Figure 1: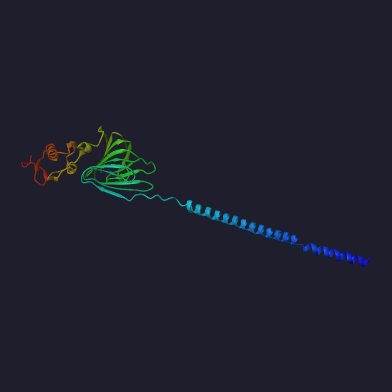
Figure 2: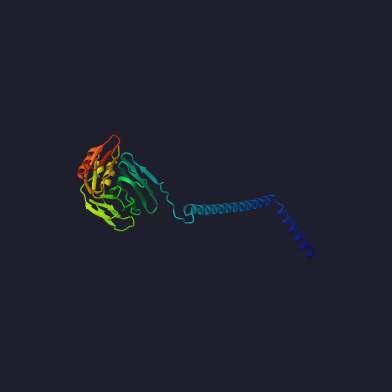
Length: 290
């Protein structure tokens, strides 16, 4: 019985060895191992690729966020450099905010702008403003003896020696003394005359600035102020000689194209004599003293 079992076991071992030694089985097992390893390698490669894409996506999103919202700092708007204009002859200029200005002869203007306001200084002469509307940034004008504030409108500013005159042709304009006192609001057809004594408001009917129509418009000004305005158009100086200027208050319209005639008319209105020389025009008391 024992011998039979031994023989049986030996036979089984031989069969097993034959099976394991079978070339087809070995080839199948080899192919299976190779395919398994290949699948594992492909799986890891795929997972690695997905991880790389994820990292790239995260980095890209971060860069975009940094570029789009860098620490959420406020956006800085660049404004044009300050502008300065001086007119020998009448000229039209355009300010950096889009406003348009017609400058009379002999006018000087400085303009700058910021995120909060627009600031102009008329240091000399006369100019007609058509202000570009910008409710977030008021347009301010300083003349030395008057402050003017608008949002968007059309008006004329005339700065002479001792007063500033503002004529409103469209919209609304606020006028005050340099310290902000005596503030008044003007609408179309209203005029403000600003002197050291305060602000006087009156009405006018012109549809355009008088100077653009060839006229010099004087509104209760001194004789010196009147000659100051005549000198804008004169090729030679018009001057007073030994005359007390304080008593004169002149109103009227005078032709800008005829300075000698306008000076003669001023002399007659004030009991003066006019002397025209090659290099000047002089208004003086008559030689007989009368």
